[in-house]
Image 1: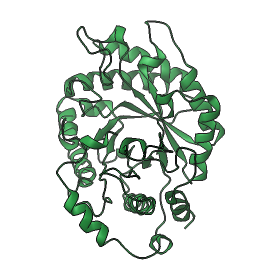
Image 2: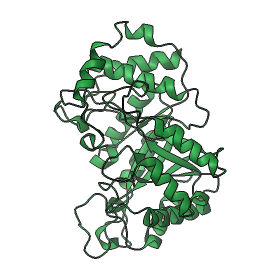
Image 3: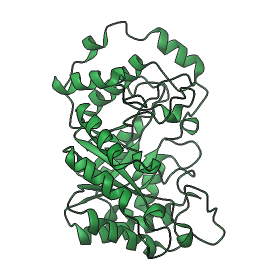
Image 4: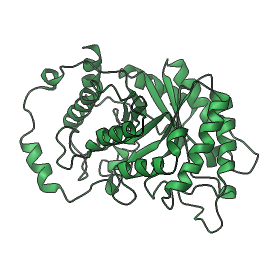
Length: 348
């Protein structure tokens, strides 16, 4: 979710133009379509929240009208040393989601713990994969066995097409991890949906459509039940983006259909818009319009799974940092205009 790397070209003049021509109608008059069940992508487990913090977040997500939550579990936190496990973070987050009545998408992400990384890997990098795919297979087996009764869908890694999260980007290496995860998760939970890591609209890695094309070339089509995408279009709506980044969703669907996978879904596991004062940010009212537009855009597409908004609440009161201000709620859980707008959309 790094804002600075997703803007494909210099777009400041276009931002100003679109803002000048934004609709002057009240948001309540712009909400006009029903919406499919949607979710919210949480990052609370990455910040070591408290049990009460997970409960507060889960209930806030439910209040906003969502039926799903995406929970991140990071391998290096679960197994910091080989064979020694700390399940507290995942347990608390999963329990809170269940208490709030949310369905769970669990994203098993990196980095690999230092002991599992290849020699010479940067121990402080957030994107270091394991040297041995079998080690990843073993941790996915343990995670699936622990949470199989609570989790309905599984996402394997986060943004593996971006070097920030998979270093260096390597489709073949990622496909080996996906294969291990698919086999082990289905052994523990045969009815589960196992999907690729959400692919970002990155400019520094491999384009999401090309990445999926290479996954199929590597034989990975047989080891995924769905494809996950992160088609961010900020600071524009998905229907007004001059860069047409949302087109990747239809292009990936066409690619999947060409390989006989037209019945498999695409899950948008992150889509959001920051508020604040950065060059990527918009006002709270405009954020609401962009998120409502996205949910309305997604609703008629029968090849999409539940879409996920990023994220539940801001991570900091610092409005100048776009990455910290994607929340539906402010850092203190004060609702932004998006919360009421989305609730109105759901109720319609």
